[in-house]
Amino acid sequence: MFIINGKILTTEGPRPTVLELDGERIAAVHPPDHALPDGAATFDARGLWLLPGGVDAHTHFGMPLGGGISSLGWRESAEAALLGGTTTVIDFANPMPDEALAAAVARWQGMADGQVLCDYGLHCTVVNTAPERLAEIPALVAAGVPTFKGFLAYKDRLMLAPEQMALLMDAVKEAGGLLLVHAEDGEMNALSQDVLLNAGRIGPRYHPMAHTEKSEVKAVEQVLELAVKTGCPLEIVHMSLARSIELLDEARARHPEQTLLGEVCLHHLLADGSLYESGHEAALAAICSPPLRKADSCIELRKAVVRGEFDMISTDHCEFPLRVKSARAAGGFHQVPNGCGGVGERLVHSFSRLVVLGDLPALRWQQLVAEQPARLMGLTGRKGRLEAGHDADVVVFDPEARYRWQPLGQSDTAGSLWAGQEVQGAVRDVFLRGRQVVSAGRLVMDQPGGQYLPRKL
Image: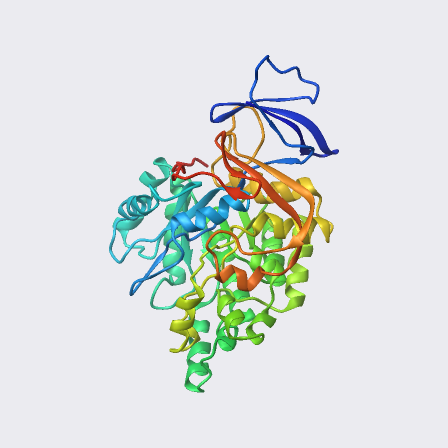
């Protein structure tokens, strides 16, 4: 099949192109005057942009929390992803206490397979640094799970002490992996939370006061020091402060030989802490960790994106229905499941704010939402680029469309963050490995067709 009359983004701007697909792969990228074989099947992109399918390297689809609570499932979340132009996500396998890491990965695959509509890979969270758990890491890397996550946050649940984090870093480095770290100081957060709860300050508006800026900055300093000491390749996820990216830049300058990556998420770029004061539903939808920060912080993060200081734009998509968040809020903000939606909003809202209203070149935007997460997370040669041999994941994007945003798929929580906003840019059609899954903004696939993707750094 040939996608005709579309334009791909280049350093010189959008360039007319004929894209040839052969089954699940891209066969060739032709000039616009390429002669088509007689009777060739075509799709008319009618002058719109052709983008590689988006790659979101940080999601939590259907994540169970216990007590029957889980984030929106694989099917619902992947529906929003496809409608929003993201064809690949990398989710997190979270082991239960004393569960083998490989068993957790297999369990997560079991939850996804038969449900997921987009392609996916998996990171593996590590909360137990016993020798037998760390000894599993090389086998997971060899099997296609080369990225792991550790927490400095969530005392008594997920938090690793500095000496435990160092052990994990040593193991990940020796196995040839990459460590992702949630950088907030769990001890400091726990103390702040206790002070608030003891004072009767339990409403959702108090959530950010239990996750102070000082907590993030202290944890970023600590994790960078540990990474440099151990030599472990590191990505700090969902950075929410200008000072955090400054610290990362300083470490990069001092240690150019080391892999030190920074991720920013959509909600930290575009939504601010005023939501905690703007009504109960909005405050609940905005409960995430790190929390939304001041409007000035959003502005500084967007400037950092334009300067090239972040390596990718992700979502940390972990969407709980508002009814679930609301039911838990009666026990206090600390009982509300943490997480925001955004996997369906990422491409359009980042384009609208950073490219249309900002100074980010369109090609650089495309790289941040597709090419770089694919390359840095071990999907080089398959995802993130419109090149011969890559998967035929193609997004037909209208850069001129203007409208008020409405929630995608079955989302209600994301709607509280993004609904009604004026945006420019629309995902019109989406192909997943050569199969059209979105047509004119509507999902047209009726069976789960997502595949699991082993990765190699």
